[in-house]
Amino acid sequence: MDSVLLKQGAEAKLYSYDFYGRPCIIKERFKKSYRHPTLDVSLTSQRLKAEVRANLRCRMAGILTPTIFMVNFDNSSIYMQEIQDAITVREYIATIQEQHKDRAHANDLISPVAEVIGKTLSKMHANNIIHGDLTTSNMLLQGDPHDLKLVLIDFGLSSFEASAEDKGVDLYVLERAFLSSHPNTQELFDIILNSYQTTMKDKSAWKEVIAKLDEVRLRGRKRTMVG
Amino acid sequence: MVIAIGFEGSANKLGIGIVKDGVVLSNPRHTYITPPGQGFLPKDTAKHHREHALDILQQALEEANVKPEQIDVVCYTKGPGMGAPLVSTALVARTVAQLWNKPIVAVNHCIDIEMGRLITGAQNPTVLYVSGGNTQVIAYSERCYRIFGETIDIAVGNCLDRFARVLKLSNDPSPGYNIEQLAKRGSKFLEMPYAVKGMDVSFSGLLSYIEEKAPSLIASNEYTPEDLCFSLQETVFAMLIEITERAMAHCNSEEVLIVGGVGCEYRFIPLLVISTSANGVLMFYCLLYIRFCIDNGAMIAQAGWEMYRSGAVTPLEETSCTQRYRTDEVEVTWRN
Image (cartoon, rainbow over all chains, first blue to last red; front, side, top):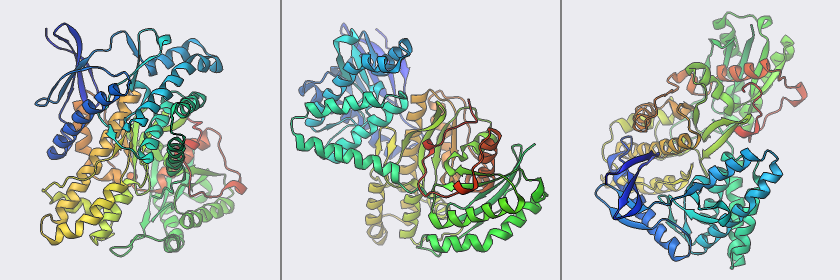
């Protein structure tokens, strides 16, 4: 079977493919001609490796991610399981908000998903996995959204760090993406942080991460901006 | 018909511009240039602004061929920026507003995006705002310019300027310009820390790295200063284009607008064209007019004019300055 182009993203093309009878997505990172070739080769291979590694580590930690079937280094492609019957958390939130104009009610309906996001991220950070690009577009809900089967994808910017700084920045990135894609959802993000906190077994580690999150927020807020 | 005069002095440039219904009538500017290896200090910059304010004002009025009584509104930069230069420029604006008996409008410097929209005709662009103190990717949604990505530490211009100081490059006309000139002759690429975090970037690690490495790399003849400027520029610009692309994908936007002092560095233009065409994005705008890209009075006049038309006037007792003023703190009353 031939591969069919599904989507062209900012740095990769996604193809749909049949991998020995399994529905498969090929994620092919393409060359960015605006980057210096040395930089481009290095970033592409770093991200390919990071993606595969973090994907596996997450699975070992019990977090749902697409199964990786094969990696082709020559054309920077990852062959992975296609998560069928899934929508992104972004679409899910937008749909609920569309259907229920009463904001408090909509937030109530979404809150179980926010809770599972917090729980999942807490587990991920407890295993020192930094996603690097947390957005609601990079989280899928598989099957019936009420089953709360949250699948994380897009680990290209991921890394393995034990430091509170990196975890704090990871949450900060999510906070910014969350609030900018879904206006008026501060309460939902607070639910995410709350559930992140209650899941984290090591309370002192949690405090440190939140302290860093506050610090990183202030870096943006208080920065003097001259020029 | 509305004629607006704008006063901008948030950093080392003092600019006064006059805009009449979206047409720039005059836009003179004077830049405070410091010796190589030095940045500009608030006190000295404010002194520079005070010394040149009246001459520039005179020049603006003469070039525009406008008399003070024809002006409808006085606009000035409220912030963000350096305190002393902001205050000294605001003082001039307040004084003329009272002398001429005109309303006054305080403008957030970051809303200069309006100027870019005016010049390029872009309708709803994703904006990459890059200057000495700002690095933000901005898009408009629900009555606010929202910041989708930004630097989590220092600004890109600050990073380039500080590296220029390490190399003792001239500050005339600007350190960034001189880095760019050296970069054109560089060829050997040095890989440096590349920090993109979601739609945010970080430059401080990169700066520490190159500040520390540069002296020994140059002394050992491994890399020339030209190579280092080239590598630094390639790296930071690749980071910026990447977050811009991400934000565009995120907002389904097909237009890019680049504003700010660093935006006038030519390297961006071919980079963005290539990048956008590779992604099937057809529309493309860029602020090519260097004179409108660097801090200037006309952009403040333009933003103030938009605010004034929608009914915003700042009471005199509120015409203060603030060093910290976020783009997303301003409610946009003049766009739907």
